[in-house]
Image (tube, rainbow, N blue to C red; front, side, top):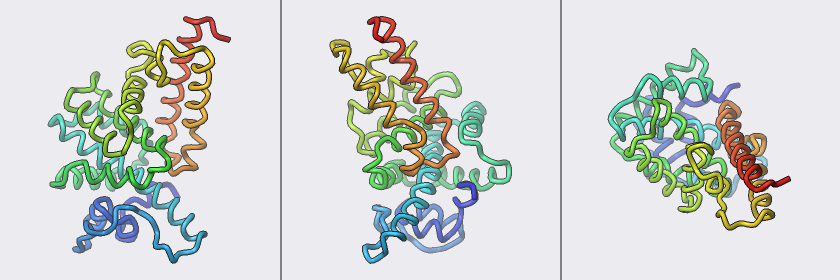
Length: 255
């Protein structure tokens, strides 16, 4: 079953717990406050390893998907408007089936009305994917894609995205690299996209490039909890990494 067919329901909400679970529980019509539940998103210790793996994979898939929708809604509030271009970008990148648009819209609207800030949601996702930071980067890249769909990333949106990165637990160096990669090699320093300095040796550049390619391969990200429906985001990032390396290679004559 597609991930979109699983994202609304009381069971999913309560399995997730925390602010994401509370939001889903509210959508399911349950008058139960789960905000005080653990935000670790980890199964109880007494569960078997097999259950842990199955529930963990399902939880991560749902949490990633809800995270994009909720943080997208919170970002829309940050600059006070949601443009048609932003909505179109969301639909194009994340391949929402027509029959699921109503459910996605319900989550988006619920998140916009929610009085909480973005921080609890981003913090919960940061804990869930603390061992898979590349997945968090892909979520952030998806938000960047939506933000720049109408031409420019506004200062308010950029501040919001920086705040999300901090709540995810990403370092400032990671944030600078992610921000650079989302402006593309023609608009940003290709060295920043690879997370290296202009003083780096040829071997250091090659090593950094190879590591980024390994870490950001779509198959690896899907295995770590990113739903397959979001594969275009990963492919776009990998293309920007390749473009940055190609630009540096031409400048330095690397082989």
